Image (cartoon, helix red, strand yellow):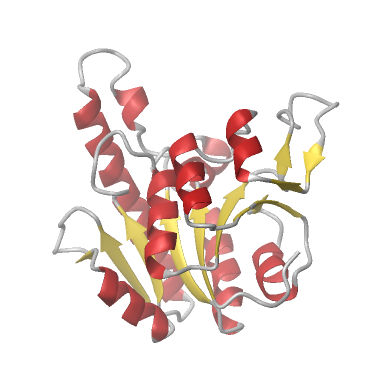
Length: 239
């Protein structure tokens, strides 16, 4: 599907995936696995940005469901959860020798940089991995939307949604045996048919900026580098 290897990409990981089978917190085994996968991309010369959700710690919608916590406060709690995940990922990447910066949409100067577009670009040009934390800094906006926004801002050629399945299906393949994999789908059909690749705002933003969305299995070894550097591997694409 690609005519050449990618130069700059943004990879979006879900927070839930970070928790592993425990369902909560950060699984160090998964952290090491993801770090190795990112290392392979960097070693091929690809400039890498990362966004990680916070669902393994708290989700704003869930936190506000009981009526005690307002949605706005719940969403800010979720943003702080993504900062925790970003710092953990930074540690894992630095442990294997990569140069990493965390940039947060919320100012937390003691542990990370504030997000500055030009500074992020400079880090990427120097071969540093940049992890974008705290979403967009605004409530009612998902980390999917934040990932697409950052991908557009840094000029990424594609955004990768790393999930637990190897692409986009008509139904949940873990629940329905008749689920059919879609190798390619356009933005309009993804929105119209409610294919939950990302939330509608994220897909619409990707469409408006002609940013392809790759959906692939984050747990398949070497999958990211196979897809982005060699145009092999199993994945689906929204374009």
